[in-house]
Image (cartoon, rainbow, N blue to C red; front, side):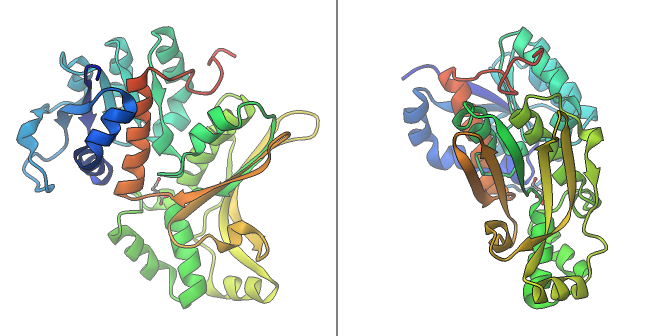
Length: 335
Ligand code: HSE
């Protein structure tokens, strides 16, 4: 058994707590799979006194998350602070300057600054991993970067926001009001701190721009995504769609344009009931990728929540523990 991979963890909310519980529960199995244990040695969060169901005294406590980057006892930083800029971005930049690898679930930061961070990671031969940033526990980043790496991808699309899918499928099944169901999604921990990011399609657009750059080898271009959310979908739209043989789903779609270029858009779509995406309900996410040799791939599973998202974060840590990581965007960032 090799030496432990020592982790500094910023953010002890839903996902951070899930990472600690997962490592506590499956630590021995993970050590066997990775060839070495994975241990959290230091943490940072907003409120030290909050009861999270585990003993914080096991870890070094750091007030300023950016200090985790310089923590002498840590090899890798996990960023679960959130937000495209501010403390999360400062921590990410500091992490590479300090010669450590970074795992993040932060789709907003990767959508806006992923290329800069990938260049910094590659220049220092470090890992930047973000499986948890898209579709929660579903290994779609790994699927595109590795499993489908031999293919030219013609189109990638799917249900990328659990909150919106939860709302639309409940409106469909129960005929309830939008606001009432949003409150339920917030209670269940699916919604963003600012739920307008969910219902206005911004969160799905962050994720789509990450998938698109992986699938097409293009620069991440969040600003080029056309976005319409689900705020104006009413029960009558859903009933009328059903009468015509469709379901309403918020989809993100990226496809190559004839003659070059890329279309990226997020908006409510009419999905025929014969299509697998019409049967994806609740907070489940599903991504379809079409490769020129593999054909149609469907990745589906829990897109939010502590367990699934922690599963993706720890999968990235296992890759780093094994020393198995390539360029973050599947090809060198300069390409
Ligand atoms: N707010 C996000 C969603 C959480 O509802 O899908 C997971 O990224």
